[in-house]
Length: 295
Image (cartoon, one colour):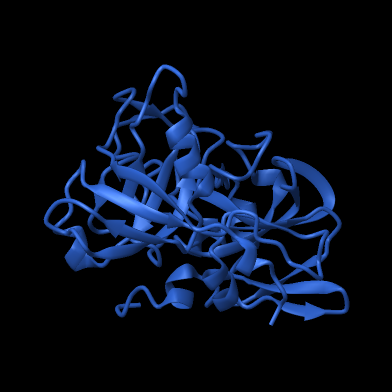
């Protein structure tokens, strides 16, 4: 087992509520210039959870399961509470319902969506049916500051130590063998590129080149897949760097908008190739945490 500093991390409460769906512009203009009216961010998505396909839906940026935001806003802090909610929540954290008909039930944080600044969580189908927009969700935030003691050059972000343990990267000759479902070339990464930090939000896999889609088998991307982005360094933001490897989890569906596609929240990065991706179709949060019995 890899040595970490998990026993030194702080577990802290962060709070949000289920966000209603939002539509800023009725028409979404596709990359081919076609206006479309499609579901997008926010809400409770009853027929889309982690483990389901990330592509093929009549949708644009749809978030699986439950979309959560912190609406606390005062004149001193602005959006500081929601920033903390997004930065401190980690993939794999427990999400506890604290109000409404589903009070007392729990789910799992599955990602963080930039731009709209939502934290996403998965709940069982039975719990989803009891939830309502506005219901309060407590996240026991744990994982920020996680380090690999024998791999100081590999940065770990946005992941609960228990999920990291279930993922089970393996040490090998000074490098780390990391299970992923797909390799993604940095050349097709879009929205989110250039952000000055990767501790919140995501960035998108553009799926507009059929040749690349076929070469990297991207039509079978699933929500919750762990994927490796080649020549991408997320140490202090998202940049192109030859030889670097960043690994993240697919958190929302495909998009029709130019520059967008399935979003990826960063979990690990190495600027000098110390991460060695290993293809494994079970490298999905649904399989690792046994979130669903139907797939």
